[in-house]
Image (cartoon, rainbow, N blue to C red; front, side):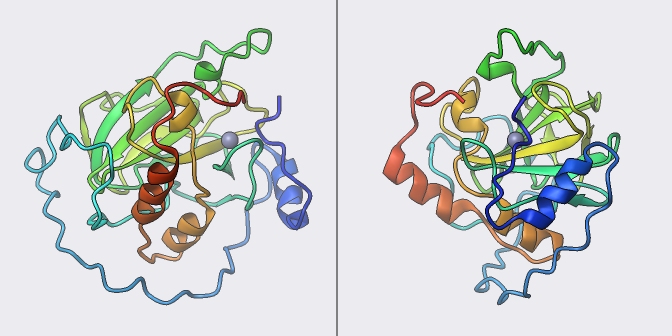
Length: 241
Ligand SMILES: [Zn+2]
């Protein structure tokens, strides 16, 4: 119903794009000013050898690692557009053509995969609003959530390693979605599974998406750690939606 509702404040251009819905006009390349290269956090990526580093048990602490050792990738192959707003809570809806590849934004380990769309408008249960979805624990300790897929690649299962840029699913509009898009959420790992109210997103992703789209590295880890220090990990949904 409201998954694509976009505030009118300051995003009139993008409202137009959003309203185009599935298969709508390709977005113009984001014209974000080229930010300063993030202050030199070029830590060598120790995790790229398959299975070596992170394995299935990411180091216990709920907090993300401070370093941000993972290079990030824009989570869509092809054109997509997103506004600087989202209904009800911080996240980004990346409007894109149905069937485009959604990509893992990081090197990491798959946390949760939902392959069956159980959402109904009548019940509108929070845990099922995403339809077909994937969450990934980045090697940087942050959690990345993407949803509304039409299908999820066979190899993508909980516990499987993924690399930044690896296709994981196809853009769709399962769950509470009126047009094809990727709902993209950034959150601390917290419970890792089951905590959809945190998983759906707690900080605004758009500035990170802007950077990744421009092939610049920008890590959400510091902002996520700050959020978690302030809020902890909520044990249940405090607002629905
Ligand atoms: Zn959304």
